Image (cartoon, rainbow, N blue to C red):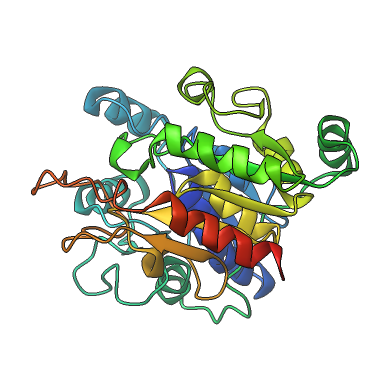
Length: 314
């Protein structure tokens, strides 16, 4: 069967969809993935994909319409849309001439199953033997990470994040000053600390003690560095999903987002905000805080220290 899978953004969300696509490929489907710039690093390394098509989405309506007219997609047996946007669902019908099986369709829905990886498998109509994200790392990337890390024990922190192709959600970030305290705590335990993130995170997390590699590594090199670490700690972000993909013990901090909607139980240690309205969303565009409460600051530093101590004793 010739299948078009559509997952245009974002990096972390696309990682959650990789088990479903891997299962489609294992069943013998010829899979083409329509992706956007933010998700491309995920799909270009998933084994078995027949073709990748990069759309400009998200972008202006006029630009997307012009691209669509020039790049109509025909000849597929089915279209799978791993998203919840009704407008995207309608766009795909125009683009392909087919009715997509979509999370944006009221009948199939999105958010029926948890975590999101299970929902993607349900929409695709496949049984997934594992919900672990698929992100192979090359030996070259492992060697590059080794040059940074050396051989002594280290921890990776991701104090930034919360940026994707659709929106920026600073409410998902724990205060940088507290990450600074965590870094000093880990260093007092004898660990070197590496900080990862995007180019935009570099200056914002510069006050945190440690080797600041934000903006200096590719996604593959970041995954390799995390996979070699004793543990990972960070905000809910792309690097957190890479920790799960690489089987690295991960402590993830959550405020407005729901960990059960995004991560398989047992794959991470979640620490959640304690305000009554948290979590307020799962996996879509952030609606904004309606109560002006900072759920991330309700996570006390001592709770993080205690969780890390438990992880280090295992």
